[in-house]
Image (cartoon, rainbow, N blue to C red; front, side, top):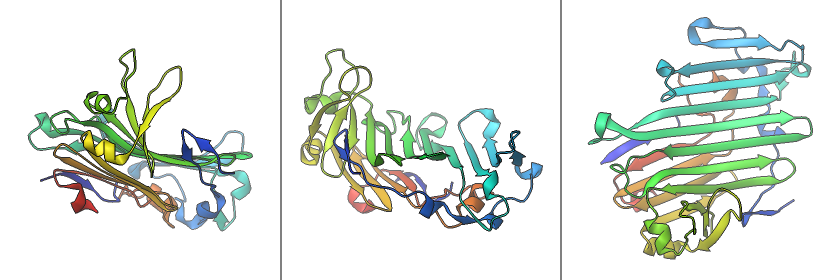
Length: 285
């Protein structure tokens, strides 16, 4: 039985043992300026505001159901004044953040956690920064006895490159204990997924990475997973207990992404998706 399926709606260096890839922002950001709203639209929640210093303009649209931060979509796009009047422009910033409730049968109020999508790009002088995420977060133990949060995360910087990895926060320490990944103070150990290995990591002072294991040993400990990182997308398939996950993070902006930012369809601006269901992971491939 499917719990939830969301389609697309809604230098090389080493860091944490994950290889970074070079990225070029400008080639994927160019768009036709006619795709932008021409004026504010109060009925649709769209606002167009010129910066007080005359240095640029911001287009944004925010929706937050009941102001409760449980179902929302926030979008914005910034243009420098030097782009005004051009037919083809490059934005100074692009943001899309969404959250939706994950519905699950048999749970109190049908609550199964949340799904989240994030695309944040900032252009700041010589340094461009991109941050992306797809996330199934705060799953109750009644939905998944093993996984509390599962995500794909991407960080790309001009001067460093492209870091993309999967991350799991577990309901208990049972799996990491079996893998021999423990902290003396009892703090939780998270699992980071790369194409060829699984890392145990934590937060706080000291080394962030505390160990590594293979996907075969992870399967023996109770979690079957596969992480693939490609030029245009990253995917994470995972099965734990009786629940399977399929996450996809698109790295390429859709050609009409400025139009989608302000569309009533609330479609994600990259080809990304989240699936959570009670089916074998093989069925998701």
